[in-house]
Image 1 (cartoon, rainbow, N blue to C red):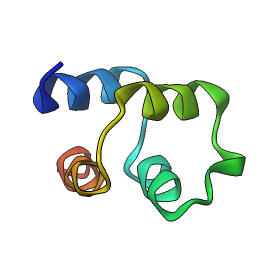
Image 2 (cartoon, rainbow, N blue to C red):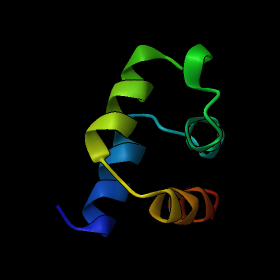
Image 3 (cartoon, rainbow, N blue to C red):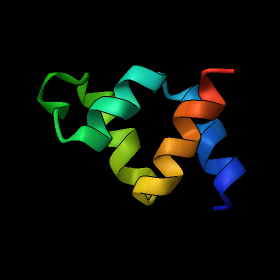
Length: 58
């Protein structure tokens, strides 16, 4: 899956910029299980997750 496709999938699955930030920061214990699963399934690098935060915030 390409990065744009992964970003679109995360957005569809309800991953917000704040949720992605929490995941990157390692404070994901309070994330919704579906959001946590989406982020784990996406298997993005930390850099890509920061890009996602910027992208979804637009």
